[in-house]
View 1 (cartoon, rainbow, N blue to C red):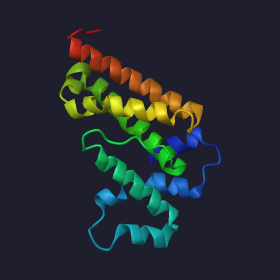
View 2 (view 1 turned 180 degrees about the vertical axis):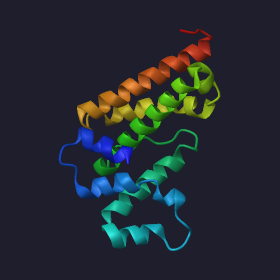
View 3 (view 1 turned 90 degrees about the vertical axis):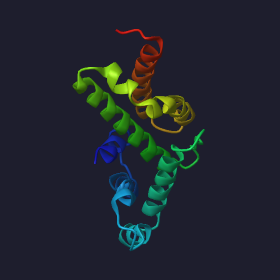
Amino acid sequence: MKVAVTVGEHLPDTPPTLVAAALLHDVPDFAPATPDIYEVLAVGYGSEVPRIIAALQAEHHALDEPDPPVRVDDLPVLLVSTADKIVALGSLLRRARSSGNVSDFFARRLALRALLPHFRAFQQAARSRVPASMSARLDVTLTLLERIDTSIRTGSTR
């Protein structure tokens, strides 16, 4: 839900297909193997929604590979992907703060910290294609995470 709300905050008059894709983007992670979830989504929402969701799933899976690609050529996917990053990384920051020890929380998340350069490259590549407010929000979140990462690597605490 938060991904759809985030898209709407930054994109007035968000097209319904984009709202649906944002709301349903994690459905393939929870759907049974049969029937084909993309066929079900196509019947219910048209071909664009499952296309966006499939592209987001491919992006998520690519994060597990070395040097994942940064793709910004498909605007609907780019908008939902940017909102998803804002929500997910913001949620991690909130969880870290509520843990009582932000550095310790992130020190245990090496895979996430290793992806920070990828997320920064994504934000930079997407900057001219997404609404400025959306890019700025992702930038602020990434800057906070990069500062935390630097303090962990250098052993400094603030």
